Amino acid sequence: MKTRSRIAIFSGMIGVLIVLVFGISVYFFQNNYAYEDFYKRLETRAKINSQYKLNIANLDTAHLMSLREQYLEKLEKEKSYFVQVSNSNFDSLGQQYGIPSDIINKAFNNGQVRERDGNVFYAGYKVVHNSMTYIVIISAENYYVTHHLIFLRNILIVGLILVVIIMLSFSFLYSRHIYDPIRGVINDVRMISSANIHLRLEQTSDNQEVKDLILTFNDLLGRIETGFETQKNFISNASHELATPLTSIIGEAEVTLLKERSKEEYKDAIRNILKKAERLDQITRSLLFLAQTGYRGNAMGFERLRIDEVIWQTLKLMDTLIPDNKITFDIGMLPEDPVKLKVRGNRELLQMAFANVLNNACKYSSNGPVKISVASSDSNIHIVIEDKGIGIPKVELDKIYDPFFRATNTKFFEGYGIGLPLTRNVVRLHGGTLEVHSSIDIGTTVYISFPIFPMQNTPGL
Figure 1 (spheres, rainbow, N blue to C red):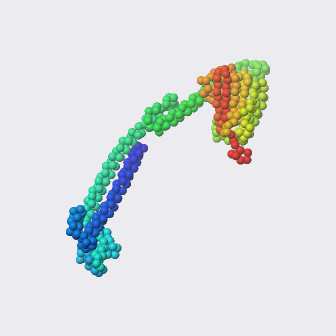
Figure 2 (cartoon, helix red, strand yellow):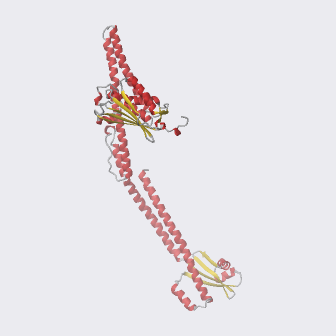
Figure 3 (cartoon, helix red, strand yellow):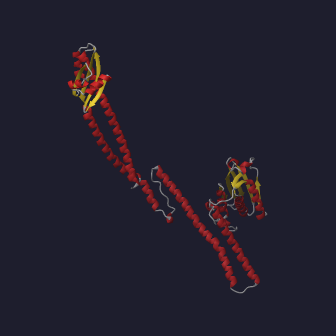
């Protein structure tokens, strides 16, 4: 069964249930009111009848009966009974007056009575006058119950049937149109494939939920398109970076084997092959490590570290790799509280991430001044690395995290384009963020942020 049919049936059922409960409630309360009202009418007539028969209040009985006839309409098959009770033989009294004996019995013992025998209703009470006991009873058929309530019941039943038909009809019609925006979205989505993934859904609906759905789906398409582009660039660049040293190795080997060569020529050829093989090995290792750090489920040894200690150790490593570097560590903004320098992380991974950024800063500034500073807020540690190098073109900033991507102004500098994507993976693995701001011929600033790892959350450390 289609969803719209379910909605139509469900809406119809809810409407029917509401009307049914309303109709039953109306009938129930009206029915109770009808019985109560009719008994009160009978009791009023019984009191007037007792006044008339016994003249207890010394009233003008003729005038009393005239008022009764004038203002109290005659009930259907109304009968009046005035029973003088001299003994407790209620059966004989009942036969004598033509009244059920149990009605006389209840009126005598309880002081009043309300009874029903089929369609005939009885109401009356006991009167004691001049040491004599009387039972005054009025009986009649309840025309309202036997006619008006039946008419009301029939109206409610017919109304219920009409409401069911109307509500089901409107529910089916409404359900057909309520899904029009969804059907439009489905038709538009079917037109999108990998060949035209740049297409987006248009905001044509006034329904807020449908708008949210379209926005969410467009956002998903954007991420998928970015993934496709990244994958395409990765395959293109990786194939080029891997093919270049392989081609050089094969070419060097083929040229060497074309003829007999001297011992020194063979050594030179082997050195060239070894150099290209080492480059290929470095690229392959970088790719594998990049894949590892991009997998969050990978178990790594994390501990509680001071970020400034990790940076000092990285600077010692940079002094070994680039002896004439001009890196300075600005400690002026270091927090006094050492807790605000603590992070949960892997020492080797963090050193590698900082080393990648510092190496790029030194390389692309031709070993110019590089400044690294550390500050802290209530919840995060912030590291800023600044250089005065060649910068990155603004139009290429959104591609710097693509593996093997290198800016167009870096062709005179060696590199593979893996360091920054690898660094971002490491930062993300530690729950941090990385941002790069750059301008051509002005320099590049890298902002790295890590969450503080407070002592109370790390028992035993």
